[in-house]
Image (cartoon, rainbow, N blue to C red; front, side):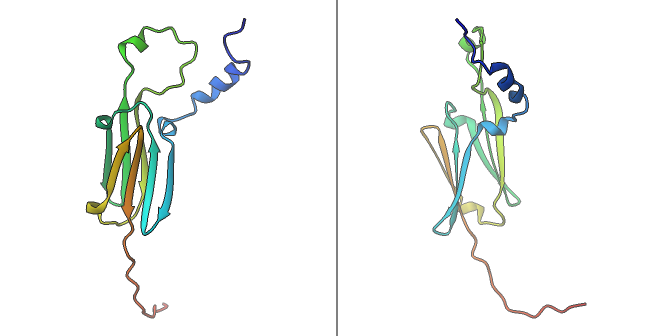
Length: 127
């Protein structure tokens, strides 16, 4: 009886190429004057998630650690990630006081209201 999938060795070669940010899958969309970011964070507690806004960049970071029980197991393959991860998104100059975040059932939802562009008409002088 074979415990490992046939392509296990080939698949594991790519595991070293993945970065921690690839463990935080995100959907990004625009709706009703706002940008929305939804990040899957299964198994992570709300207290371990942080959202920062700095100079037009929104950074989502989280940290998770394995339990003592996990450390005593003799894994054949371990695909769940333990450690810190982060994703950074450029959202531009927005009113950071109006950014809203909600975390429920392992999904972080962030709403970033878009700034209304100020349109002015002027002729650009050509040198």
